[in-house]
Image 1 (cartoon, rainbow, N blue to C red):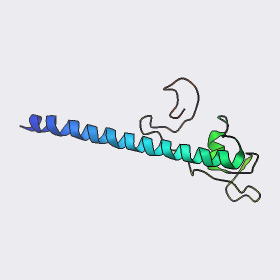
Image 2 (cartoon, helix red, strand yellow):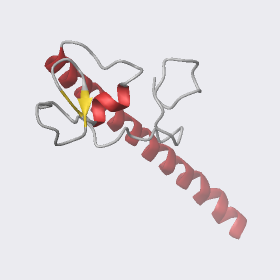
Image 3 (cartoon, rainbow, N blue to C red):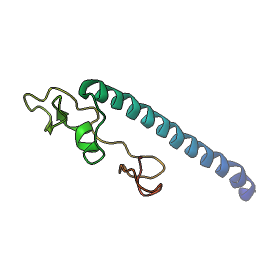
Image 4 (tube, rainbow, N blue to C red):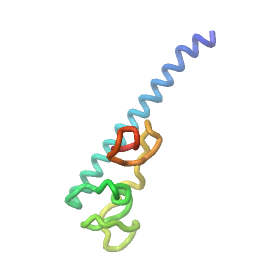
Length: 105
């Protein structure tokens, strides 16, 4: 009897968890796209890959130079308080390398 109940409930829980991760991923991607467009509008370019996390989580000037939040003469940003964790990769790394080597590409 317990095995039958488990056979019914476990797939539903797995499906719900997968749907929650997918929903979280979609929301994170929407936020990335939105904030990248704001950054581009304010700086005239997208953040560089080498400085991606700094340029999005710190304040910056029009040239893209970054400083700690609250630093005078750095009026732009921050765009995120932190880079979101990819719910499927369980990390927040960013790269343009081989798929699977990083959380975000």
